[in-house]
Length: 227
Image (cartoon, rainbow, N blue to C red; front, side):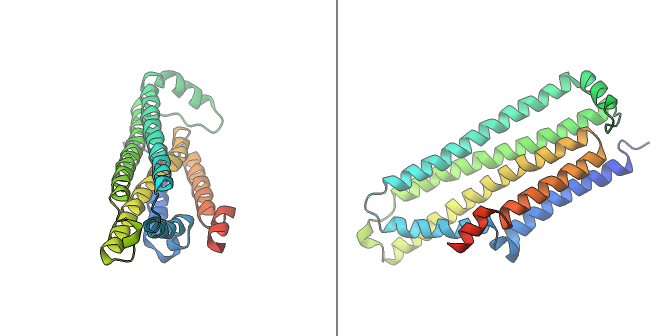
């Protein structure tokens, strides 16, 4: 007897395939360069180039501090979500009864429930590491900005190389932050599995449509492309 039914496995593979496939398109394909994330990567490079032309760089420091605070907030939220997932182990008996009583819910065993909870915990652990590393990278960016050459040397090769290196680090920080947020979005889709394989397929599709639209068809993406 298999632990999960064939439909459960199909739904799980659909979830993983949607997540991985979306990440590949956004980060590795030419199509992803036209998305909102790809467009913002270009602005990070432009930001670092213009930073060299400023003698007073307090504004740059404030922007970096805001990015750090956002990463710290989501990292702490990941830990809170992980703690919430742990409580599902202690209340599994009541939750299993409630889910089995729902018209679209399917009865599951304790082992299946606990494995699903472990999967949710893995997603939040992954998100925490991404946000924590993004926070650390933003610290490095702050150091690089502080070590940037003065504006009078902005046309020197060393200054341009420094700006390019700083832009590379902040772009990598943004990439890891985006991965952490993507994990949060797909964690919402994963919650459908607690109701059954068909809800997981539906919630994953909904998350995929929403995230795709925000990248390529939202008002913000159109505004950035038209800038």
